[in-house]
Image 1 (tube, rainbow, N blue to C red):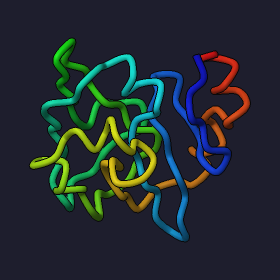
Image 2 (image 1 turned 45 degrees about the vertical axis):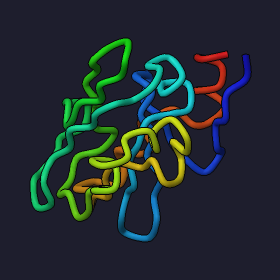
Image 3 (image 1 turned 30 degrees about the vertical axis):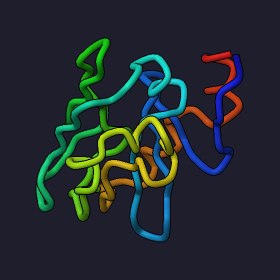
Image 4 (image 1 turned 90 degrees about the vertical axis):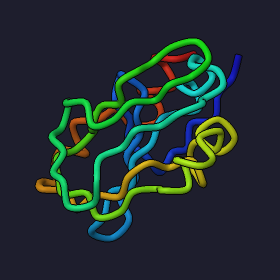
Length: 127
């Protein structure tokens, strides 16, 4: 099975992605992760202004199959939360790299992105 894995993002082995856009890092879960979870029915995310820490859980995704923690690829302050997911959690399944994004953070250390897998490394892990 082949999954969408955009080359412009970095990935955690636990299937979260990070996409740097100027001084902001947008975060979500990968196409592989949403496929493994099945139909997402609920998303719990931190509030704007909270701090998240790399490698620590920042939220929860609940599907018809499982409840899974979502882990931060980078540390930083939450600048924006995709509140659309509270009413339409299925966007995580439908468009995991677009409308299904979860957080935008101001990273504490952009070098943390370099520690993540690039698209080719992530592709090797999931395919």
